[in-house]
Image (cartoon, rainbow over all chains, first blue to last red; front, side, top):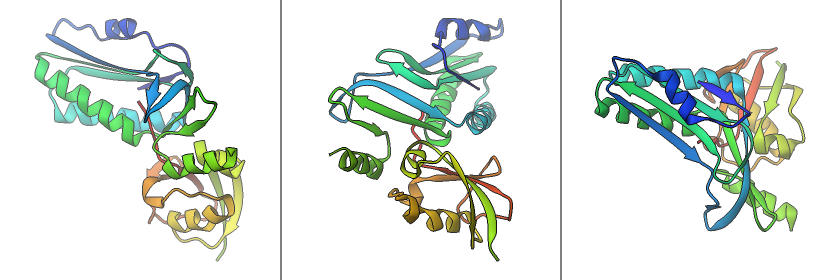
Length: 146
Length: 81
């Protein structure tokens, strides 16, 4: 598990996993899209508490290995300012057969999204901004801005 | 007995409090007490059930005991990925 402030390069990360015992590689890339909840997103920013994000991310990867017979798994998440289309998170899993690689990859990305101390702030084209998953915070911000 | 606790804030909590961290002296048995003791002062509107807490760099739960000298990390709703 790594947190990086520079661009994620999925192909290079995939190559780090190569193993002659693997018959399957499943990779997931989360990209920055240009809209959310009906608003046009201009760019976004991730704030990460790195120490605990890495620790909890390693725990998630270990859990995936306990649940599914995979060979290896890894995850890299961005911090800082990201533009539309950039890769925000990468998960890669290798295994002998595809079923367990798909399942482990799904487990890892789902847990990463809800357990790691990572926060996403979206900046909208109308000049507003808001923290994702934080409804009252967003309301607070809009009131403060108006 | 009052305890000295270092509290660290992230994301919207850091913005709303205007602080990355502060040293507070307060009556608090649990992490929940710390959160409730500070939320009004800093205007935190998010329900505690949507938030997470860590004590001394260990993810914890709201009923965990806080001791004098501990560092409590208050995490607003997370949104990785």
